[in-house]
Image (cartoon, rainbow, N blue to C red; front, side):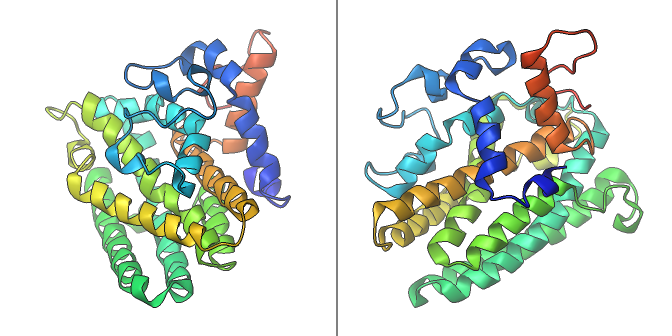
Length: 308
């Protein structure tokens, strides 16, 4: 299980997952082939030191030389994973099995509770001038959780107390623990770990807004909220805060660590969607299943994206 893997230093399990999604893998595995508008995001498609291409959401095109520019470049593989995730595509087009989406919504309820708590801790570490912004994000997170609970009830037709997915999956608990562990270390570390909740949602919104079908989509209320200018401005503010906190650290070694924390959290964002494809399947098993598929063509080997 993923939670047991995370008893080791975070870099060990997440490095294993990122190695699986190397440039060579992205080029070789058909279901990870670049999609229209995202080919420039695949690591094999451009040099490591190339500038971030303008086919990202505007909020994710930071100034050259900033920490966020490094972090976004390092998360290319995760951006490609989200853009090609079949659960996200099914949600956008209204073809996703209902249980898979209900599982994802239910996991959000728990995640948002932990996220608000981590932001409360982070607020105390922030410069005085940034605490009002933290208060706003805490309030918005709590309001979003309340709305998500109500949406779950309406979509599922039963009370939250009766949900078969009230218990959080390991990937949610590990994601929340990653954020909590780093906000307790200091503002720059905490913001690096919490930033993907902003930026990866922006990536998903940017992608979904281009492929979504709202007419007849049973998830139109959720899907229609993606890709708004207001949220993009929120992301810009979060990225700016993360950059200012990173710039205040004493040396480049700290920036490298911030990037690792950021990418680790991006991996968690991907695992949330990928685990939904199995509706409760262990995220560790899903990743292992994909690795076995690459290593063996024996009959019965799990196919990419299948639960095992």
